[in-house]
Image (cartoon, rainbow, N blue to C red; front, side, top):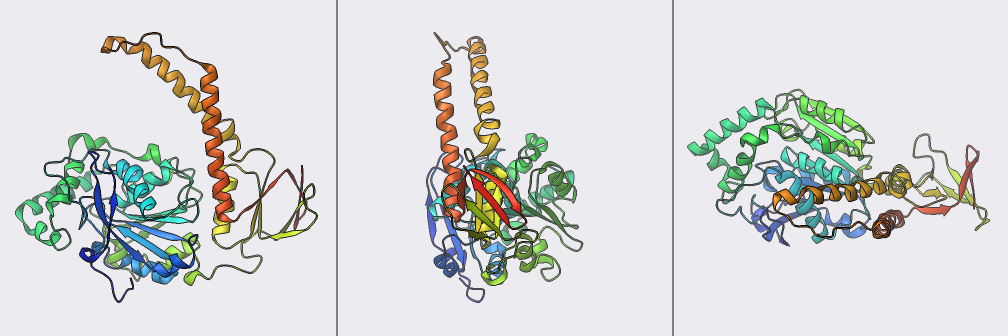
Length: 438
């Protein structure tokens, strides 16, 4: 698909997603692919995935994904979520759950990527979301912190604002009167399908307390938050709340568009969210001119890794990472994705203290303790639990299985990224040399 010959959503191929509906139904969703030749040239090159707004669909991006992908020379993918555009419509009378964005992030998006043969462990995948799509993208990055290379969040929502509810109530009136429904019918064969699903959640009394900041504190991926100052559905307070919560994000940048409304990427594209802005932020070189000269990464001198116990040949690298914890693995993969030759040195297991000895084992122990308490409290609620026993040996065995599984993921991600892993202790001999011994 090119900018001059965009296929309308009604003519796009649809993919079958099994059991992704809120009631477990299957769904068919249209998928648009941009610069497919970049995908065919390299299955490990960057991929941009576009997630539309709360009343949007593929066509309502109005060419923005194509402009971004053309300018950056990368492949892209956009889809309409179930209930939107030419996807399977919302079942009659269905009320979307208040957790619908979490469902989209953890159920629909992963299956969509899997169905489209997108392996997030093999390539840098950037999520570009608008409005509800931005919130879904952020939630996805929070749920699986190492899965995505970055998030561009346009007109994001991480909590409910009064100004947003006021605008949604006005949209509800306009839709019921017919004028808004007619405009939406240009993009949605059944405009009530997305509108009633969307408005039914946002205007539900219990949804006013919704916040996502407890989840966004788990995001480690870079974030570019884009906000139109004139947005009737949200204010800059959304960006501030995200910044305050996403303290683990490796890089947080903000783009405020003074004249921008809810669609800053369309309101003033020349002065605001130009594709090159995204390219500079995520460090994807325009036209995929990947770095081949040494010293491309600032303050990362060329290093020579000497695995003295196994090799005697000096191997030149653009970046040497010491330590195979979450941060080390992430930085090694990101650098490799941008064309650097990367080595990682780890004397123990991949995953670091958190995965191998700290956070993960601790949480598994906490879950085990929680079940014991809940079983003890279940009887007054009608449950009969006879002879419930705890086996420490079983718990320890399953803990080892889970840790082995997680370490295997780290191993595969590094291998698929082309990172060379050396086992042993690292010592820095000089500004350009790292020694490795067993």
